[in-house]
Image 1 (cartoon, rainbow, N blue to C red):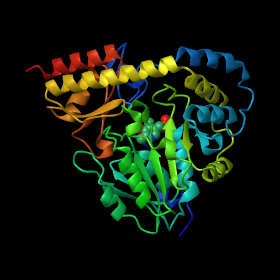
Image 2: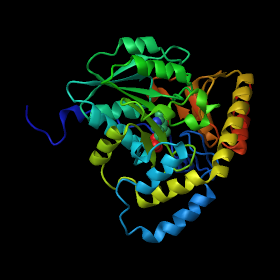
Image 3: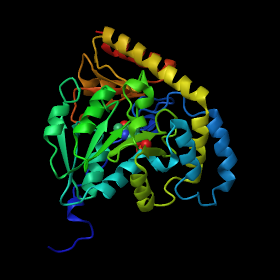
Image 4: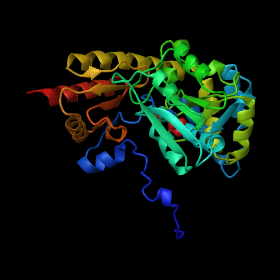
Length: 366
Ligand SMILES: *Cc1c(COP(=O)(O)O)cnc(C)c1O
């Protein structure tokens, strides 16, 4: 076969489908203010203490950061009560996902397994690495058919991704179910538990397996600063894993992928307990209010442990999405997840949630 400038496998590579941006919608509809409830960002913005620290470090940006973000790893270790040699920080948890696949999965032989639908980055990075990606359908109510997942595991299953709380449903299995899955997987299969939204689960101990990561060789838990800490734009995430896996990840990772400002912001964010608890309070309260109010308006609302809710509206999902958009409210359509009848709504602050409910009430009026 003749060589082309691009690998054949990437000719029809689909791009990641992100939420619409505020600027796009301002321009399209000539609106001065737009509410974005589409990408599960922090409804309170970012901690003022983090902003202060960022300002302080701005004059240092001509310097390279320290390779491997040692100060941040130390702070994360202390925060989680985990030895720091079990922690790897990345340019968003997206980078850790990408590196884990490249590190653990043999292209052309092994495959990655996940539920369907799932976070698209797992599939995209697998495909980029020339690794087969297989999926097992979730149940209709978005709970996890663990037996079916296990039945699909064979000796070429190098990695299993599990998202909990799940995106886009918000469902979280009890910790025993995740541990049982881990116990029944072969030792040479890596279980990657993506806990991007775990900070919003109540109570967290019922759902998180983070405390176990690092004690067993084939379990990785991923967390991010993008959601709870409001640092999505700075790009910062991390994985907790065995010291052996962490050591390898650090060797293959580009040394400066976590930039100097992101590392400083991460350390300051961990230190701001008040902002963290205020965010959780806002999200949990908003989640309850939206769940009740939308339920009363005829929506089917799935129980969520995350900072968003999955809903089936009493009118067509594309129609509601477009009508909200023209009123300056962006939510997330889910056609790219294969769920065209459903919508995902990020929990906003109290005002944003009220504005959303008002707009929906007007749209639903006969
Ligand atoms: C938002 C999200 C992440 C976090 O991505 P970052 O790269 O850390 O911003 C990871 N996994 C899932 C399922 C997510 O929804």
